[in-house]
Length: 254
Ligand code: PGA
Image 1 (spheres, helix red, strand yellow):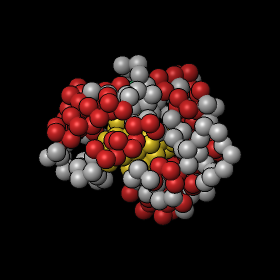
Image 2 (cartoon, protein in one colour):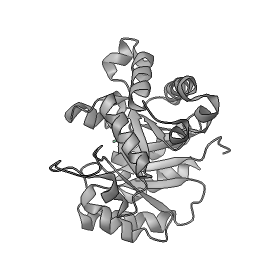
Image 3 (cartoon, protein in one colour):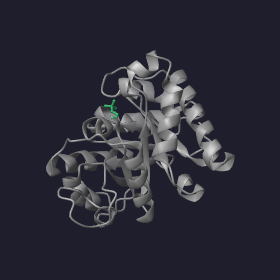
């Protein structure tokens, strides 16, 4: 399938996997996916497994991401992790503003934009998550919410930084529910997000930005979702925790 942008499919492991379990998973993925060249493959383990997973994927086609970082470079921020610390383990991407962090850690668009800037300053590529709740969708507010989140979470980025930023459209009602957005709903939201990017950063930048879909992606729906012209990859939660399902999502997307 010919895509305008290279697909990037990421596994967001959330708060799952001990080091031993993480190694089992990533070693299995290495075996299953060794021949895949068409897609950028990314795993995002918890902080505690980054070191060992990083060693395990040396010389493979699997890249490493983290699930969060602090917006400061160093200092008295108990329990926090800075971008430079992630870089020690060859982390290249970092998920920012996931809806679970927006909900449980009260992360705001403003904070997420500072994290995105800090990530770029450390040469990490942020994956910035946006998405509406069920109430917002049913109230006809999807585009208003996406517009606000895209403006707020990416505020202050230069066009060059934006080109190196990935957006994950994750409708909150689809996350972990088994109820994915339809391919049409995803395509519609992605087109809208791209139009907002064009207004802020210009048409040329907007055309290059990769927008992932996330929310109950599984082997059975990956092909249809990934075949949409503005869907440039996936952020996968539950189905990324097993070799079989994550590998099948990737193979079905090619
Ligand atoms: P899910 O999670 O695939 O389990 O729905 C997606 C995400 O939260 O990134």
